Image (tube, rainbow, N blue to C red; front, side, top):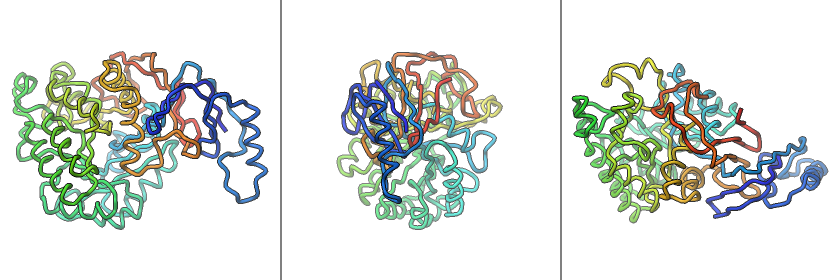
Length: 446
C-alpha cells in the first residue's frame, strides 16, 4: 500500500481540486480525503488480510509506504493516444522498454502505440505479441491495429478479430487512406466496434517535399516547395463528412492548420464522436523553428504559421480539440543529420509534453490547469475506452506527482533511446517527481 500525504490534487473528470491524502492498495485508489493516518491505512490493510479467501478487496497486505508530497501536485497519470515505440522492426530507434521508461519519466501511465511497424499490425498474432510484451513494463501499453492490410490502403483488416484481440483503435498513421470507399467501409466497421479510426491527413499527391510548410518563410529560405496546407484540410473535409455519414468514432491526428481546426469544429456539431489531436510541437512552435533547429523540427504534418498555432490553441480552449497527443517519434541523430529532404520527419515528445503545455497553454492563460490536464487524462481515456484518467476510489491507481513551479533544462540523455528534440537546451516549467501506475512507482526523480 502507498499513502501519499499532503498533495494538491487535480482531477479534471470530477472537477476536484485541493489538498488531500491518497491511499492506494491492490492497484487501486482506496481512500482519497485529507487526514488519512498511517494507523488508519494499516487498519485497512489488516481488514483486507482478514477478508474471506477469494473475496475481492480494494487493498492489499504489502507493507505500507508513506510518501510526503508537501509542495507537490497530483493528477491522473497521463494518457498518450499517439506514440511510436518502433517495436517490432525498428528497435534501434526505440523499443517497448525504453519507450515505457520515457513515458514514465514524462508522467505517462497509459500509452497507445501506433501500428506503422514491421511487420504491420494488421493481424492478430502481431498485435498479441506487442500486447503480451507490453504487459512486462511498469506502465500500461496498448496498441492500435492497422486500418488496411500492410498499410497499402487497398483492403481493410479484420476489424472484428483485432478488436476482440485487444486493439485500442485502428490507424495507418504515417500514410493517409486515399480511397474514400475503403475509408467508408472501415468507418462502418469502426462504428459497430465502437473503436476509433485515427487518420494521418496529408494528401501525398499535393506534396513535393514533406516536413516543411509549403509556401512559408522557412520553405522559401531553404529553396523548397514543401507541404501545402491544402494537403491536410482537403482530406479532413472529406473524412469528417464520411464520419458524419457513418456516425463513427474518428480522430484527426496531429492537426496543423487553422482550416482543419474549423472543419473539425463544424463536424463535431453533427457527430460528437469526431475528435482531434493537438501535439505539443504544433501548439508550441512555428515554421521558423526549422531555420534554427533544422531537421530536429521537421515533422509531418509540418509546423506552420503563428495563425495556425493560435487556432490550435483556440481549438483546445473551446473543446474542439480535446486530445493532446505527443506523436513521440524517435530517430537516430545520424538519420536526423542527413540533408533536409532525406532526413526522416518526427521528434520525441513524451518527456517534454507536460512542460510544453504548462509553458504555452497554462502560463499564458489560454487554458486552466484543469482544462489542460483533461486533454492529457480523462478525455483521451474516455474516447479510447481505457481504464484511466480519473482519481477516485476504486479506480486504477495511476497518478503523476509534479512540481508546477519548478523548472528543468532539456538535455540528453533522455530515458528514450533517441534525443531528436528541438527543445534541447531550453528551460521549461513543471518537474515530474513520481509516476505511479497500478499503485506502484514507475518513475521517481533522481
